[in-house]
Amino acid sequence: MMSWNSNTQQLRILTWNCQGGFFNGDPSKSDVVAALGADVEIIQECPRPRHTDAKQLWIGDAIKGVLIRASGPFTLTELPRVRSSPKWFYPVQVQGPIPFNLIGVWAKPAIQPPSYVRTLLQGVYAYRELIRSGPTVIAGDFNSNSRFVNAFIRRGHDVLVSRLAKQFNLYSAYHVYHQRPPRDEHHHTHFFRRKADNGYHIDYVFLPEKRATQIVEVTVGSYAKWAARSDHCPMMVRLGREPVRSQSHLKATLPGEQSDRRVNQSDRRQLVSRIRRMPNKAWAEAWLDLLHRLFRHTGLIEADPSLVTSMPKVTGRYRLVPTTINRRWVIVPIPQDQMIALILSREDANHLKHGGIEFEFRPTSRAEERPPVMVRWNPLTPMPMKLMHAWLHAANSELERCYYSNYWKHHRPVVHRAVCDEEFRCELLSEAFSVL
Image (cartoon, rainbow, N blue to C red; front, side, top):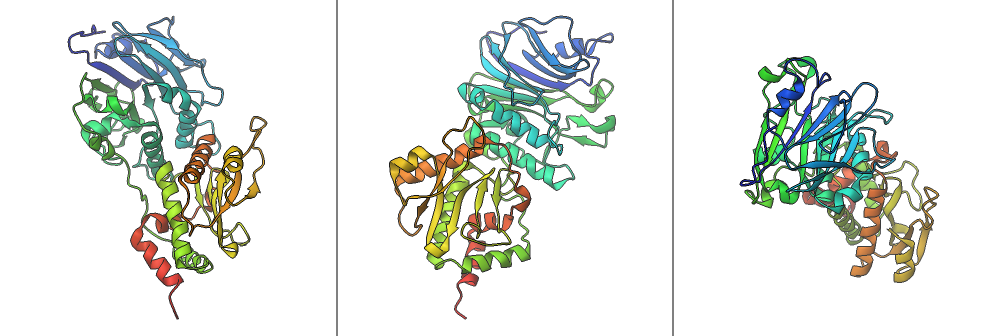
């Protein structure tokens, strides 16, 4: 491999799915990749190497796995694996002139039904403490893209990109450098069955915000050069010492808040009917404002598999338009009492003593000794900032406790649009409270 240039101090990270046989051939795939001069390599579908040491680490099964190699002054240390993590998430610490944590990824779903995005979210949340402990790079074969034919997969990938940015300050190096949003990649990293006309962009290097502003170059290998070796092409990311782009360049690469502007008309009529059952227009608008605050704080977009805004068929005290994150309510209107219920930690509920405890959740595991509660509040009354912060903190805790909701099939996107689309909201409120 090329030696480290101490004058420029440009870090080079490479990811490639080699599709097996990494150490075979003349020249071997290993030699061809080494000639590219990366400081750190993440290689997926790689067979077991003859040895591992501070320069190369590997995890895998009897056939293939994930290899991470370092060159020059860089060395590697294996980090403890989290039991809840998917099999092919490999955490290591890169030591050298520019130290950082690295999670090598080869997305292979173990979840039923199979879902690459759920597998990726599961891995990210399993290592959230590591990601937040210091600069962390997540790189590898994600098997995910916003251009896939399946709409659920497309929207799920938008969720993944949005969560990595808004919750972990991680951005795709390719999209930042080329200033492309998801779905608009000009370079393919995977060619299904090695066919030139069947390409996708499914390999990524996600960088922390500071490093993302220091990207000097991102290149993707050509089909002509690499198709004989693998169904993937390598991606190289080169980072400099100083920022060369602003934070606005990072934000421009994120997916839009609204993944689908179409509205199910039956759901629309049902939402109008339920808003009409609220005390008055101001009360309904205050409830929608709180939901908007929640979505903005958590970064939840409409397609997020953790978010469920539902309208149960059988209405009742808590079943008008409840909002759930993963498997717990976070805000529920109770119009018959002119109140709403908000999720709080038990400690905050006892300390703040606002409105009294309305509902107590059951523990979801033996480790959860003090599950949260729901407290009552009148949305027309200005909410103290301590209560607002406690509510949003509790909601965020629920988001991190799981990575998707079993209730997602009950999600009604029309509610999210009513929250985030001012014009659409005005239409619904006018229709619900019009004077006949």
